[in-house]
Amino acid sequence: MPERPLLEFFRRLLFGRPRASQGLLRSLGLVALAGASCVKAPLGDMVPKREVAKAEAVHLLLVATNDWHGQLFATKDFGVQEALPQGGALTFFAQLSALREAFPESVLWADAGDSVYEGWAAHQVDGQLATDIFSWMGLDFATVGKHDFDYGAGREGKEAQGALKANMSRAKFPWSSANIYSTEDGRRPAWLKGDTLHMVERQGVHIGFVGLTTPTAPLYSSAANLEGLYVGNMALAAREKALALREKGADVVVLVAHAGAGECTPMEEAGEAELTQCEVQHSEIGQLLEALPEGLVDAVVAGHGHSPLGYFFKGVPVVQTQGLGKRFSVIELYWHPTQKRLLHEKTRIEAGVPICEKVWPSRKHCEGPPLPGEEAVAATFFGKKLGGDARLMALLAPEAGRFYEREQTRLGVEVGERLSLGEEEESALGGMWAESLLLATQADVALVHRGAFREELEAGALLLGRFFRSMPYNHRVALVRFSGEELRRLMQLAFGQTRFRFDVAGVELQLSCFPSGRRLVHTQRVSAEGHKHAVQDGAFYWVAMPEFLAQGGAGLEGMLVDAPLRPTKLKEGMRTEALRFWRQRPQALFSPLRPRILWENAVDSSCRRHTPHPKEQL
Image (cartoon, rainbow, N blue to C red; front, side, top):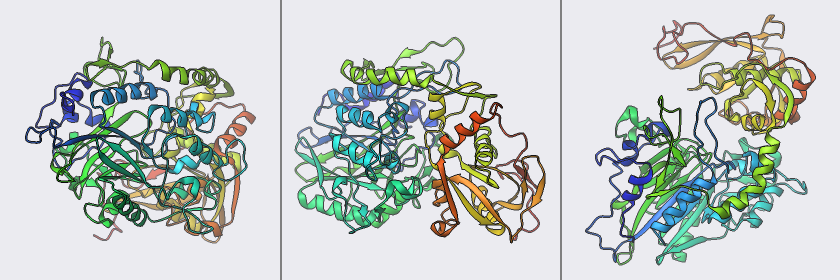
């Protein structure tokens, strides 16, 4: 183990001097930006304890990433003047290399899926560039995410999952999921390497990896992309594989799961957050760990949820970042070679380490705007300035040129105003998309989910790169038929959720706040001319929505469990349908003029302050 402890590395990361009583991330001012980051016990100072002699403890550093979505290049916060670049493969590799140099034979890197799909540069070659870059950087293990299927058959178009199969065949790292099966024979597909036991060795310690994928994956990708596959129970697969790894000689078993790890109260609100302040027990990872025998697994690298987390559950460290290549996490483990066990009391979590080449000195990170007159400075990582590796730059350079050239292509569409994507009841960007989908498909109602959007659209000429980054998922448009009574139930399910995640067109909804949450009290149809009509129980209405919603995604599974039996028409992808429609009409893109959400009794749309509805039974 190196002379310099890991604490010194993180102390020098971004000029912070941590206060031991508060945990390192919080003292650096990073937790608030990470959103929710919870721990059951204080992170401690991550200093190797003196009572454990170097000869007795093997030091392991598990670097964890998730949901890169092919974001190989650094990006800036949209709408923030003087924003600094954040994330990207070049800066991450510089940090990873610093770790490997400071702690030789200690570092492992695992990724929890959704690795290659979405990034504009990666997208140009069906994710092959991202696969090659992750291979070159020395990824030790990756699991399969829901969106890793989204390239479908690929450019050759010969078979389902053609693009993913091609990427897996070229990957130089194990890329596997243990709970994906063939519908034909119930076996794990050989091309997924699901039956392979993956282990690596560090300083004589054997670390085994088990890849898992959320069973909800079919709700988020096109049904055609998962043709011939089904995603089974994670706990059964994890138990089987973990036991097999133990029998094969694994000293440490790590679950790398593309599955939700929960949400926690932000530390700036909760102080030193305890597990009881985290919605973990009912998360996929919480339920998974509850179902496994104690001591079977030693750490979890999670993805899918995009919630920055770091906590212990049943003594097992769990980490997850917000993804998009902007942060990574570290789990520090100590193995006692004589006692043949992990020293669990010394396990430490460092969640949400920012990937920044330059930082604002006042906040020691690269997010947000500077203070007046503030100049950015180079970030240091273990005492070293972060610069791009020449070899990696050479790999990225050819694609970078094409990337920057193509993203400036004008699409012949004007955006009339800034279209923002907020968390209020109506979003300008989501409303514009819903209205466009309604008119383009000539449906009665249109419903979109804000999770499909990544960036706002700025006013001016619509450029290909901006269009793609704002709406990276070209889900096919589904027209699904509902009765009037079913339409009201669908709207209640969508708009009665805790947060506003949907936007709608073609209807006007009146919501009311009850102590138990939001409820839909009235629904009426609104024509393009503004005429309003009652929704009739006996009538039928065509609702346009992305295919993943029609399959029951985003919390709609209770309403759309019978989706395969419903009358449905499939159109082309959302980007394709919208762009064709926009080019056919001369108007610029604006947010809808008329509100779609009305309130009966709410003081504000959060339902935190309201007059209770008289019909509510308390």
